[in-house]
Length: 443
Image 1 (cartoon, one colour):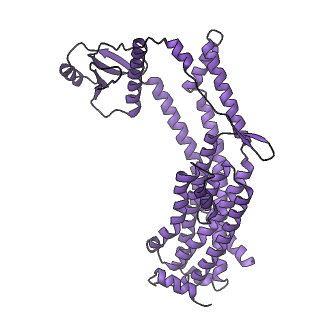
Image 2: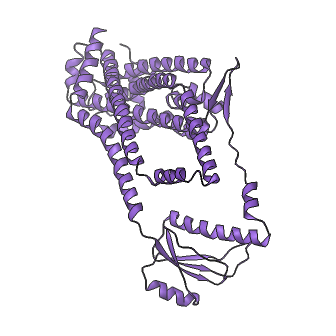
Image 3: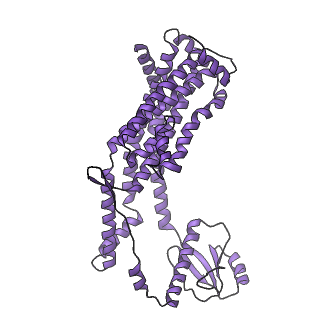
């Protein structure tokens, strides 16, 4: 055990003391807030300095009256379409909008001519303006009062309450749980894959540099493999914790700073000033405050401590399970290029769990497919952390954890038998048949 601990220390200190580790660990958390802050700064400044786009309009229907706004200046042309095209091409205006005579029940034939491919956002804004006008025309034809229609409009927002067997009630929000499961599942997938490949690279480097021949004279190959896996895992956890803390703190600070200047903030302040004069604005403000309070209440109900413990367990379990297999591949080959043919079968179950996260787990976290994906050790690291926020029965979580531990022991044993032979083999053309022979070879 003491030898394994020395190998863990060696792997940990060797990587932590590298400049590349320090740069990546400190620089990455700084990059994300800087990118967020830079993009938000540019977005705010661009929104403040943006000029309205000019849209030339040929309205043959005579049913549209356009009001200029911050996005568009409308110039109505009283000329035929073909002539309008020539006029438009001589300008740098954003678009030429053609509105033929149309049936308001089937408004077809409207065309927008542009000199460049427009953004989907601008096209969508124009469509919204046109749709609003056609809607008003329909209201006039059917003699429906706008205020009456407004009062008929009803928004339903279901309040979600989880009722336990003991009768205890807890509020929840599927949207928050979806986002949490989405983020945690992707993190597990990325970290297991990244650090698993690091193990393989480290084994290949030592094997090709002949250092391993000196090391295995003092320790058993299995001890070397296990120490290397745990050592790199500890580096991964340290790096992840630093990233999590720094990115969280810095991103929150950046968002808070720029949030003071956001247009939405200014709009809310203006609305507050008019609350006494405008009952509608007061009602909207009350509804928004109520939704915010409900959202904060739902967040407070999420068992973050339990989720954090489960995440760390499945991060370690998944990493150790796949790390052993990556170590076995690294011991069998002499270069990264040779390892590529063996990487896909290893990462395939992890990829199945990743795809299952979107196709099954986030859509139906308590379905039968979601259950099996979170139980099978090769897919459970991604699947279970995606499910855990939705609430998983204790027996399912316990079964999944036990099977993951058993899976790690099994893969470590398999990998160890391959590793003990492959780590000392150089220049051998490796295939699945050769690896099976090493596995069956007696000590």
